[in-house]
Length: 342
Image (cartoon, rainbow, N blue to C red; front, side, top):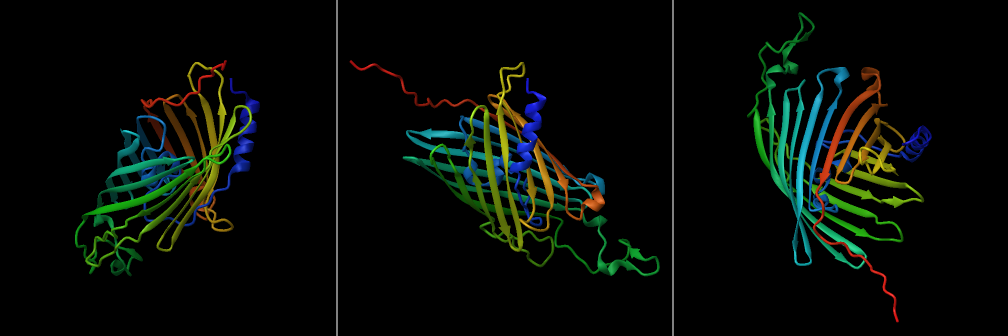
């Protein structure tokens, strides 16, 4: 049994280890549980696991308290391809994001590929990603500045407007690139990734005036740490910037290995992080918990708003669910067999 003492101690450690930050909101969809949506995070995460194949599912709902919620979901699949001693990984990701209050639907399908090469204690990964994006807008519910009704004192969408849309549905190609580096240092194995999104600068405007997406840059770092006994840490950091928006997130999961149990769960994990700037503009604390089984990982998180938006939503924010199922590996691991020498 996972005693109440261990639970209280875990929560204390989670709070102590939490140091996460996030500034403003970028133009791209990404989840608070970013490490649980790997293919969406960076192309170099394609195939970066031990197993033959992997399925990932994510769901997020936010801002239920201040209007119609924004719902986001993503499903991804990737698998390994071994050619002699070379490892190549391929996969795909489908994303659906809908702001029901604004009638804006954002969907995309991306294909990913990554090449892995190990040289001594170093592992290098190169990833590429490409696909098509669809954005759909129902502008019938909008009102515009020239629809101000001075007699009634509100915007009236039934009044004539000079605002015109070129189209309500747009499609555009999207391409992303990434590189990553891992090296074993003592008992640590830091993993550092750098990625560029929208390298083809697609036009995402519904109007006649073009609006080309700026390139989004991503730096992702994770450093798994084994502690004494049944404890381990999974600190990680994410830094992204696009145009004038910056996302900076860093924190840690704490993992506790479980004794044999009826659920066959291997360990329980949890963490807390702060999304915001280092010293100002705090946005939200993100509390995450879950269970790791042999092939299945489940996680749930909740964003507690601490920005000025808390006055409208009473500190409530977003809830996320993630599920990752990894198939067993067909590659034999290296094992040393002791032999007495004569």
